Image (cartoon, rainbow, N blue to C red; front, side):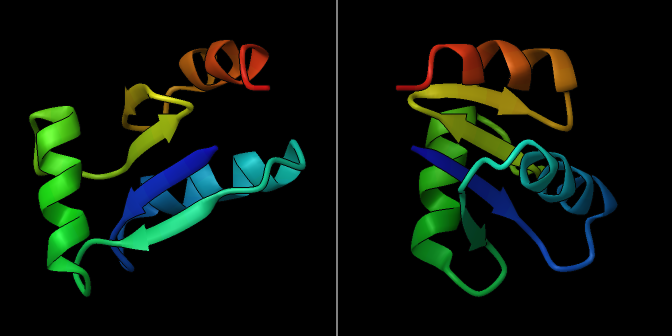
Length: 77
């Protein structure tokens, strides 16, 4: 399962989504501006308020980090 915590105007959020789409990875996009409960979940998981925060099967990745994303996707069942 892949979840991305984003905001509408974040350029790095857009890069993450484009990158995952290029790799044909399905993901759930969570707009933390509109969903305060999910924003609280994101902060609890990451310890940060900045986006994007990517949750790939429990592995939390902060920001757009291709290497960390690829590494986490290797272990995705």
